[in-house]
Image (cartoon, rainbow, N blue to C red; front, side, top):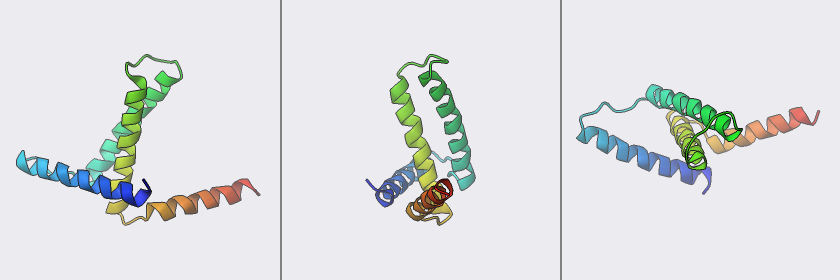
Length: 104
């Protein structure tokens, strides 16, 4: 899947969460809460990277690593929509900038 397709899927799941939150009378997540979840997931990813490198033990390490990376991507996609960022373009622009910098 490409980034636009992944973004559509991420928005679909966000919609399902919104329906769930309404049914449970939960407060809907804001961009700030999505960001806070992202930060938490990055912390979890850090612990998993340490485990992958042999500094700690974690059961189902690869499964947990996949899970955290996917959640980080999901939050990133949601924030890109929230702030009207064309993530495909932004990513390519950044790779071009880095390539130029590294080839100097």
